Image 1 (cartoon, helix red, strand yellow):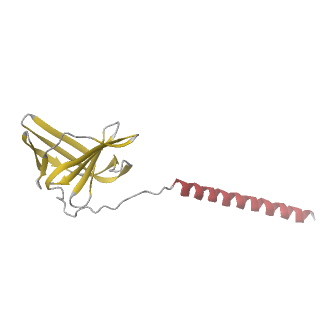
Image 2 (tube, rainbow, N blue to C red; image 1 turned 180 degrees about the vertical axis):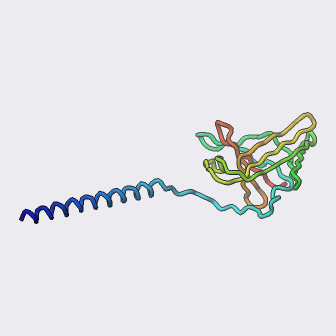
Image 3 (cartoon, rainbow, N blue to C red; image 1 turned 120 degrees about the vertical axis):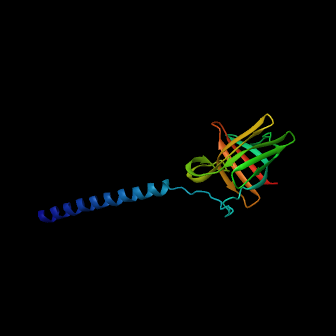
Length: 170
C-alpha cells in the first residue's frame, strides 16, 4: 500500500510538471498571438518606370493631420512643377520661373504614410529645391507614394503634425 501511494505521488508530481509546461507554452503562444497585429495595407500600383515622377505636376491638395484629424490648407504653391529625368526641376507661377533640382532615394527609416500611420520600412523620400526671381521653394518629404500614373502623395512630419501634399499631373 505504501509503495502504491509513493507511485501515485510520483505520478501526480510528474503530471503537475507536465501541466505547468503545457500551461507555460499555452501562455507564451497566447501572448505571441495577442501581440501580433493586423496591418492595414492598400496595394497601390507604382509605375514601373524609375522616372515616373518626370513630367509636369501641380499641388492639387495640401493637408495636415493632428490629433483632431485631417485639415486642408493652401500651401501657397499655385504654379506648376516640371521634373526632368536628369534631376533638374523648374517651378513656374505668375511671378516667373524658378530653377533647381529634385531627388528621391530608397531609404529605410521611420515615417508617416499618406494615411497618417507610422511605419518603419523601405520607402522613397522626395526633395524639391528651386529658386529664382527673389523666391524659393524647398520641400523635403519623408515618404512618396504613387496613385497610378496621374497622382502621387508626399508626406512629412514637422514635429507637431503630419503634412500631406497631393501632386497631380498637369
